[in-house]
Length: 417
Ligand SMILES: C[S@@+](CC[C@H](N)C(=O)[O-])C[C@H]1O[C@@H](n2cnc3c(N)ncnc32)[C@H](O)[C@@H]1O
Ligand code: SF4
Image (tube, rainbow, N blue to C red):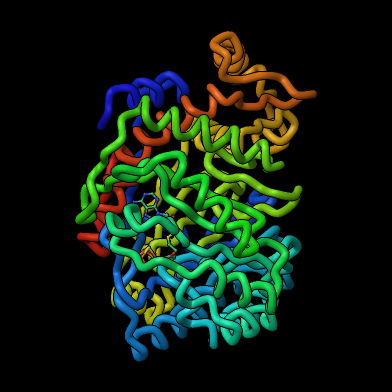
């Protein structure tokens, strides 16, 4: 565990307790106070597996995928039967894996969720570019999908080579997307890859616009310990220069930063499954964040199906937060969106942000990392870069360790982070 992350955790949570994950789980789920709430569904199938990708996924097999979908419907009804009527939720996102491989049944999953939830802010689906076809898009549009996100990664041969990905054709994608329009068309890119320059990124942005994207994500390449490659090549200084040039270029073209690594061309055109105050996750590896706990489902498809066949939730590990741990978790994701709202904090935690973290916020302001905008605290560009560096530590100290363990064991005995 890295020293800066442990020190920051102890300082901000005002205690020495780690985030302790145990196999004990709650059924029914403790949903009191979980408002606003978002939904996430994980589809862990891909045609081929990319060497850089840390997500929970296996190669698509028809029979297994159909059995998984049936398990998913069981999990949805198991959770949804906890209450009578329909509960309001903001959004629903399908991630993976490659959810579009199961496009013919995503409508069934949406209908099952709509028996228990009213979705007020649209439905999003993540795509591998080769699944972006007129038939698949029309099917999903008919099922109520309003936002899509396409994992382009890069249009440049050098980066595609290091990622072992084929070059998507921006013209064909553009024609297909023009024929079946969506409210948000987001494109994912990876930056800080070996040999990548700002000129590569600039060309990628212009091609993404030609393709019809109105929201762009640039994720810094993370070299997870349990994935085969490629390995990290750029220094922090080089990353800073790239991120600064990228941000300036996107602003010139009228984009607004809506999180550390994402930029929207028009207001409201966001794509984000991670930044909710509370969310319910369904499927292998899906996480659920409630008022007092964070839980993660097993990464093993067979263990997932087995648990559900016994009428039990497929939860593998649960972390029960101390009040300060919950606040820090929430502030981390608010800072990721680059905006922290004191009134949202107060309505969630019943105490003022100033009372809880006034000293830290003022220190960050003095360092030039935060500024005031009305009542909100907003990250400056310098603050965004600091957060980006911190997120790198966080990913390697927390996510890499947890996903590494969950990939090896269906139901681990527990872990401290
Ligand atoms: C679930 S993944 C992929 C979605 C889709 N299946 C695809 O292949 O395009 C979501 C996004 O995470 C990002 N990503 C995956 N692995 C990464 C890594 N090692 N470092 C940084 N970003 C990564 C990619 O930009 C990717 O589009
Ligand atoms: S990047 Fe996409 S297609 Fe590749 S393994 Fe990950 S989820 Fe599957």
